[in-house]
Amino acid sequence: MSKPVVLLDADGVFLRTVRPGNYLEQLYGLNAAQAARFRSMMHQCLVGKADLKLELPAFLKEWKVSESAEAVLETAFSTGNQIDDAVAEVVKTIRGQGIICGLVTNQDRHRMEYLDRHLAIREHFDAVFVSCELGLKKPDADFYHVVGAHFPSKQLAFWDDRPDNVQAAKECGWTAFEFLDAAKLKADLKVVLDAEPN
Image 1 (spheres, rainbow, N blue to C red):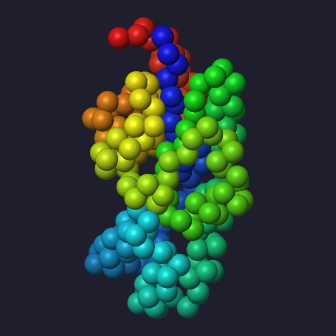
Image 2 (cartoon, rainbow, N blue to C red):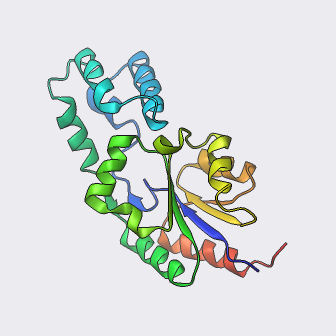
C-alpha cells in the first residue's frame, strides 16, 4: 500500500487562529453592504487578481479609518501567525516516515510573503499550494483538482478547520477531516495509515 499524501490548511490548523475571519468588519463596524464589497475584493486578492495593498486604502477612506493601509496590514499580519508546535511536531514526524506533507491555504500575496519572511512556513512542508499563486481558492472544486493533479494515483488526506472546505475536498475524492487539535489529527492519521487499501 502506498503512503498517503497529507495536506494541511494553514490558519486554524498549522497556525493558531486568534482572530475571527470577519475581524475587520467587527473592528470598524462595517454594515452589510460595506462588508460584502470588502469580501468581494478579498476574493480577488486571494486568487491573485487584485493587490490588497493597492485596494485597501480606498476602503479605509470609506470607513473613515485614519491609519495607513501598511499599518492596518502590519497589525493584521502580526497576529494569528503563531505556529502550533504540536501540529508542527506531527508534520515533522510523518515527514520523517517518508510521508509527503503539503500546505494547502487561501492567502493573498502579501500575507503569504509575511508568513514566508517571518515564519519560513514553506520549510515545514514538502509542497505548498497557495490560492493567490494558483488563481483558485478553497472550496472551489478546481482548486482541489489542481492540487490533486500533482499527486496522481495517491490517496490525499486533508485537514481543514472549515467544514465547507472539508466537504468540498470529500466531493473531489479526498479523504478529509475537520481539524480540532493536534491530538485528533494524530488519531485521524492513525485511521488513515492503518486503513486497508481499496
